[in-house]
Length: 393
Ligand code: RFL
Ligand code: PHB
Image (tube, rainbow, N blue to C red; front, side, top):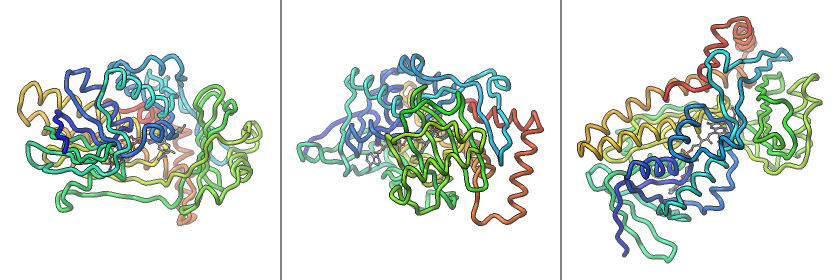
């Protein structure tokens, strides 16, 4: 058996785990990352596209923002499109800040490169990790290394950064955990294509046939989504059906401007709101998707993960300096305070912008009235802008 020691054992090499290890390393705190999947798999995942300015600043403070500033696209606002009516949310005007279009895939690549350059210990392709003694002061992670040898990793803290389907949340006894969940009756079918974007900003559209989103990764690469039925799989859709749905939902003015092509990637994501309380059990701390999920409509999941990680890194730094657990105690309460506000915004935008099969004529009128109000109200538009650009970290 191999025995290893570290201060922080990090489960998961997604954006949460990688960024946490970077922030800790910058503060002189050692960590070991254990990741279920291979490095290539992690590098190949296509997910988020919009970074809040607080996220960009965190990457800058962490020393991993060079390519993000060089290649990212700063955006001043976005469009809401509702049954053919268009309303621009001028985020910069209302908040003085921008958002940055920069793919999670690129951010992950930057973080992996930096962690590897600094010789971070990362165990890739390790699917059998188990958390032990998480309620004591000497928690452990056991797993099998690539040579097939059993490893025990002794830590002082375990950071559960292993996403919604990871093991960390499950290590918290059921009676200590409260879960809050809403599963939406639809998903998003996404397509990545090497064609210039339809428009220089994002367009979120609610059409009677369903939601559509026109996003991008660069000036030559577009990312589009359409609402699909719950339970749909990618094979249920041909690419022609996808383009046809997208063009219809974007309306007669914008739809025909979409430059279609062969997809680089096509995938379906279900939509869910979920929060686990608390985000701490003993010396185990949850961060990012392991603790909460938001529907992607507000572009918040990755940003919320970054906000958690920044808070957790600071708490661990204080704990290390003072040697007392008191520094760790507020993490869950403070993180959840922000989490619920972001859950609210993502739920609100999702509710306004999708077609719900169970909606009655009354609820459809409510959606119309909501959009009409937002369109006519500076206060409502400013509120959307303030949330979209990101609440204070
Ligand atoms: P991740 O990215 O899921 O990473 C968790 C990592 O843990 C590993 N893992 C394990 N490792 C070891 N042992 C185990 N037992 C393990 N189980 C799991 C996994 O392999 C993985 O590598 O969680 P993290 O780091 O918290 O990051 C969260 C973000 O990935 C997520 O919130 C965003 O992608 C959500 N999201 C968006 N967020 C935004 O802020 N802006 C957006 O524009 C945005 N668009 C999106 C999105 C998510 C989407 N999908 C696919 C759900 C668009 C989509 C379509
Ligand atoms: C994306 O580009 O993938 C994207 C953008 C905005 C969202 C969700 C996803 O709200």
